[in-house]
Image (cartoon, rainbow, N blue to C red):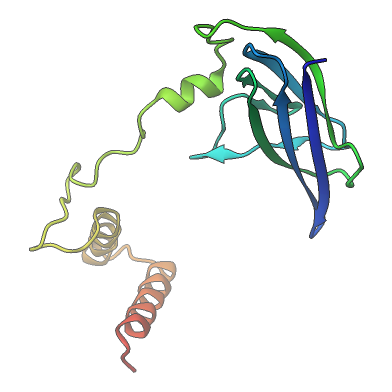
Length: 172
């Protein structure tokens, strides 16, 4: 086989960390499937809470360039072993091949779903340095105080915020 994988696994506080280098000894790009051989589900690397492209609960699928290598790393709940992963299959691929689209691929292509800080009813500016989320929460508590519907939980939350602010400001 023109694809080889060298891998190691070590225990790190009850989690097994696997590192692997996939080598393509062929002179053409090859699509590979590397599967986990340990007991336990693969915990792939993530970016913004989404598995990095090519990863799923069983391993990795991606392209290794002709004559090149691809470094992989993941965590797993299973105990370490001498050969923690293996090449399940490989095939030649064209440079223009993209591979199957997945939900994770679609999520990676989306913009950040959070509204920009400038949006919403409480814009943050030099004149109003309070973050919008804090301003909304304080406004809600103020409304409950004004209408006499504030609770013991509101009072405790305000006291906790007051104490934290004093600590941050270096006061008594």
